[in-house]
Length: 336
Image 1 (spheres, rainbow, N blue to C red):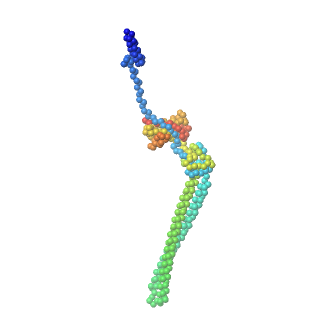
Image 2: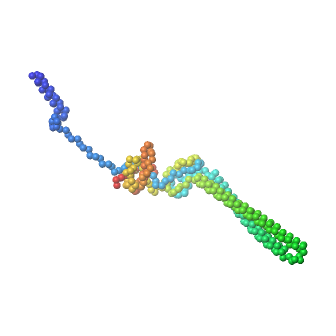
Image 3: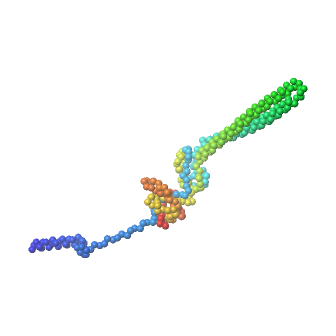
């Protein structure tokens, strides 16, 4: 009897433990009903592409020197408005100015040489013309001497015949001399013409030298390629300028653009030219302007191990206080 009671107690304990383990909920196997799991609706894909950007002027220039030299003058400061062609910075031009003066003198000397050569050629031409006339006259003399000789009557004395023959011989000799003079004059004319050609080549070389000297002199001056505002000046008088270093940055602040800096290969295909964008600026809290994508790069550049594509955005309006190299956030509404 005690064994039966003990078995009954054990069974009741097992059943009660199972009931408690299942939370005491009725229904289902063992009288417990399971609550169905809640379903999570799918998240629709976003139609926006967000990229970081940098503000740059539509037209700008980073100006430096192409030849090293000491800076003599810096004529502008940051914020100055300048005109196209205005001299912003000057290097020491002492040597360059001396080279220009020497080149100009060389051109003048070469041009004087051309003048002399042309005068010599004109004289040679005149001498040749005179030699041609002398040959013609000598030919005529030969013709007359022969005619005189041939016209002597049969009763002419031997002395007269010898004299007529001598005149023909002398006329022929004179003709030979005239022809020799003509040949010499022709050669002299050729030499004179070659002298003109050579002196003209000297002028061409001198002019090329002067152009090179002028170009070198121009390199001692940094000028504004367009009208704009000086954004920065990194030069002082007395310093040595090195090629490849930006000394003056110039910006046309009448219009700006935003260049993206982190548009990667997973999102660039969703950005199209003409897509509308919203632009915000880290340096201008609360400012938000609309814009349009104007270009998307075909080539992706490797940046810190990532492939990044540059897209250019044109803002519809320019907020006050916008500055070169300000950071911006560009939100492209890709689905519109």
